[in-house]
Length: 319
Image (cartoon, rainbow, N blue to C red; front, side):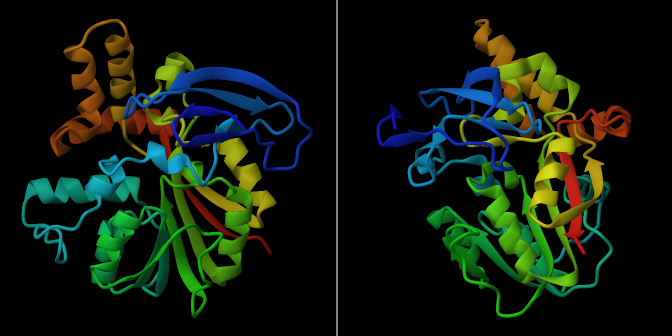
């Protein structure tokens, strides 16, 4: 093992689908999100096409790349304005609801037992509890898990691999932008399958490395997020991984979101010395709701051709 940052151990890992070791280099990049040190390679398995970060930080030490101000931890805290059921009392709230349904799209299922992996600070758990679901979560960050647990929900601090099994079979398992972070995704997905009832659903979102903007921006692609994103999926490669873990991919929804190309352009401009405009474009991912609404018609066209940078997957246990 080598070290690229104090306390960070690196490991070389094979393709998780058991393919022969035959990788081709795709790109090398660095941590653009928090500007922490290190250069990281992305390789593609020539057998199955799955891309992964390799070498990568070990599970025991990768926490150094998840600072306390990591975006999902901050963005999922429940505040006084999010503590109760939503009321569509204005156009703004109605539009925000449409945009959230676009990014967190679920099958038509009655409320039951739900598990969220990577629940962060608990906002989605809280929203689903308000809709009648019995919810619990798994979160690797102790501080974020504590925020979610403080809301009164059962939250395991750790990983899918070391979490206790639910007391009863689950009806729904969700993971928003979490699959790409898992060190052992096939093992985790198999364990999740053992927790779900036969008619239940697995819903995951993940960046879409099959989108054209990945090929355009390369190491400056905003959803690349090295080194915390350990896998970089296309619709085909994620379907292969799910199948290997005992799942059947039922549907892929390409999210109608176009903030990622704007943020990627910001990284490019920042690298070229445009220290004012570049960071402003990167922050477009946190832009007010009306920008996402304004871009929605263009995002809908891109999504129709599978060319947006984020996708939501619906899967069921293979028979």
